[in-house]
Length: 400
Image (cartoon, rainbow, N blue to C red):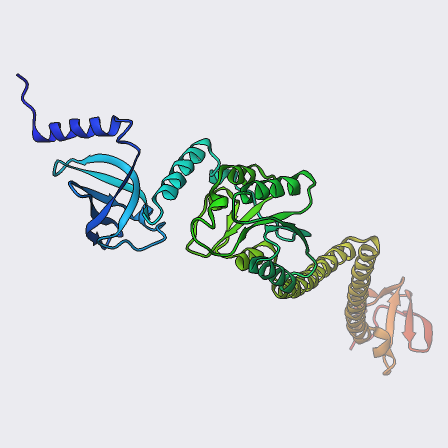
């Protein structure tokens, strides 16, 4: 015989529970007791009837969608699955939603239809269409006599006067309401009569709002190629139309505000955009001017005229340097010449002769000594004002 641990047994039982088709998706009605709101956001409670009780838990990600606050002693209809909490071996219902059992049959029908349509993908978030920012025409599917239509018209006219309102009046409660609402949505789509559709009505009981929970209306909303805003009842009211619509508004007035932009916000936006454009243009022009100045500077730097002007300046500078060098050279040469002339003048024999002396020359050579003259030699005596020819008489001439 195989021996099991407690954990293995609990794990096996949990597997059995989780694989059971009936237990994986149930709707149960009962009275709430032992209600506890955990700090984590989870809710723990016991559901009981006259003869039995079962533990239940709703985790915070599902609890946040509840439209009411549960209380001990309240009778509810809960939707969830039966499973086993392995650490304690206690089985319980993990709840996904919970509604007060004020109208039990309607709530059950609501949950059953919601589940079926959800499985078909009618509520998929990925299929939601974007609401246009600036619609030209807003379609309104509601009663022509209710307060909702006036709230919608007043809000749109106040916020965005350019938008036209296309009203498709329908009954919003009663046996014929469902067919009229679905037909109005189809008519607006067939003629492309608007850019966005508001479907809704004012508040009421679950019976009053029931046409918006019917399959024809939900399918018409899901099939619309024109974006739809659902505004059924008050903020705490939820219908299947809300799940199928592209956007849910808490009230008809809120739906009108969500369907069109605010003219004052647009004016502020346009003013800011104008300032931004002006600043951007000024910045662009300033940057272009800086770039143009840079290009002109480069063009001037590399232009032929600039090159010729530069070469002319360089040539003028070279000529000036040559002239200065020539003048300096001439001055230096003149100073040297003057010095040489002074020296030559000082050595010029004529300067000496002019003071009363003469030069004796024989055969055009100066006679440096009396011994250089022989008897009867002819020689010249050169004076400052002329030359005298002489002859030596003898070679016994007295010499001094």
